[in-house]
Length: 487
Ligand SMILES: [Mn+2]
Image (cartoon, rainbow, N blue to C red; front, side, top):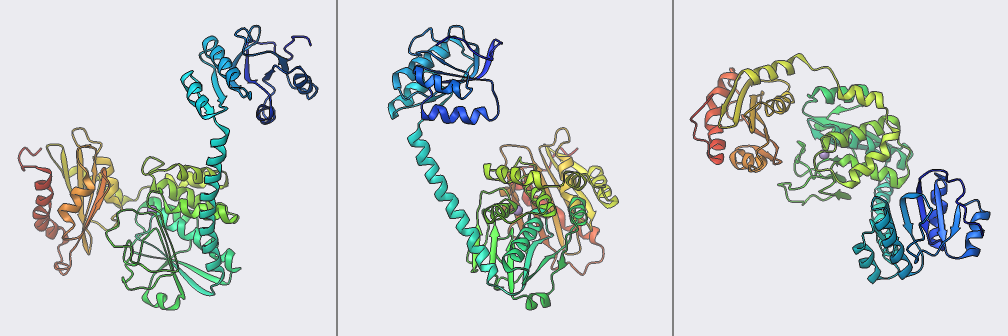
């Protein structure tokens, strides 16, 4: 057989397959779908002849011989896949010593050669027995999650009447998009027999959230006690029970709970027909996307755009609490979304009130040993506070920023931190947890202190100035601030 390398006129080749038994042949077939830049080497003449008949660029060489690469182009990637432990090891040594930059994927024949191949510098070692075992486990896990999706589907299919899907108090994109997905699944499962209402309490303050709801034309209703009575079924999304992240009475009987929050203060005592709480997943929207995938329900542009935005918002654009699953589901949604719409949602015009609050926050700042405190006074739009805190944490010399204001019912504190020695959420919980709700992450946290005793006071801003000092003193004591050295 002539020693010609067909079609290879250049110095390099993208792929070389060394050893073309069953495994090698399968890899060759897969690679051939995307490129012709491929050489196959095998020591069996008959085998090579067959491969050439199939238009593969194949040649006979014995790669236990150190000179076997002579005259061949430099491969970018080498697959060493023979069914021969010694030959594979020898081939790896030759490739790695001649072409250190070549990426090598080598097949191990037994457990011992896994280690040997790794020691000799293989970039990836494939041990088929292990691959099979891992794939088997993967399928079991997948089966488990699709069982969960099917259980939800069957449950929804058995219902008739009205399902109330309760989002957050002051709903965010994760809870809203999750509600949309649940409504889609419910309508699909019940053949539109189940009437779904997406409800919320509080405000939709943040201009991005308002843009989100307006641009995607999401139908949401304000929750009323009467509505709860009308609804045959209640679902909570992005909340672990009645009264958590929503104002439902704790005794409310709910039917579905889907959530991803961890360290909830409430015990997971809620009873429901269906509960799927997966702490660690970056967003409830990820869990909902998985259901849609498992159930093979067509996802509309609107729902896909909403879910992707929900995952992005909850993971702060894939920077916080993000898991490989979140990325996986985001990748599934991406081709289904409306990119222009997403762009419009993420760059809405900022309301005048938000600008004013940010302006107040900058003007009223007091800095003490890296801690910034700023009183923005009376606010209607509470979502402006975290935006102000986000901005002020970037000021030079500031490690921790607390921005606070007063609404009709509460004192609201929004805080940001970049001092790695400080866990802001824990400090906030310690300082304000006993007089209100407080907590969060190491780098971002919030507190809400109800004004139950002062709500009759007319002068809100005066009230805030009066009571904020003793409240903030608790925070200062915990972090060890002495009150000296103000800017
Ligand atoms: Mn969430």
